[in-house]
Length: 180
Length: 196
Image: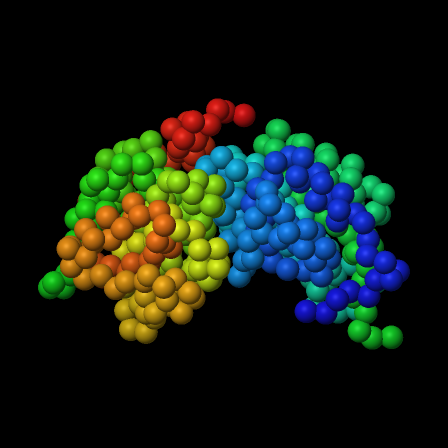
């Protein structure tokens, strides 16, 4: 997997804000399919003594895992890239049926300066797919707004059982660049 | 279609749950969920009526959240084939309290009995083993089922996987509740969790 070309040489600090919020909400299981945009958060999770990072072979596994986690008394969050949302569709039907808290953090591709046309179709339908499946989408486009968006998303997901996705925009993460 | 020497699915599930104690049992979409109902409704039964391919992962989430409880997933070959990657995910996490049993009739019994991949090619025991679940067994006798049912209570030695070849004859449909929220909250309540 290629690292994204960062606008600056310094690693962004917003993943630390995300980690702190998840910790405060007592999130314990963190299933993920890796994405460069999630790499720092995944590192924090794997180094945590309270959270368990769980690599998946496909994103829908994470939806089912969170249903089991909640049945056993634990909260979780699913980390994935926008293409993974498509892989989840049928499994998302578990959320309204079983009524467990669902929070997912989705790093966006296929928008804001995307160079890879293959990312565009799914990236363009990610928000629509989530909303049609009953998951509210909140978007963060700038580092400064990440903490407030995460706080709102976690609060409504865990306190009000409102299925919620945070779309971490490509503008926030930085577009991958392989071509001029 | 009935073949000689194959186990009866209801007998298998009955043996698995006969002395269940504190087991949480998850029945995969299809006949398996009816099989665990046939043994008797229970506050710790998780009946799936959808989410095909998700039974083993629900088991993993539960097993990680409740490491002191035996968690037993009972599902069919078609359901397991759809979630085959989850065997690799489970092997990596090594939940020592999780057991998975596949009732393998080599067919999609709920949709007209079309043959599944296990009828001629796919070997789920080999797949589970190759994914990294060391204790993966092919079961063909009731005595082996009974030994596996005992092993389910050994919370230190999992994860474990068993594929049981069963008779593909249709059995009476015994249907559990279809209310998923009720099913989940009943298990949560039995484990001591309050409603939100």
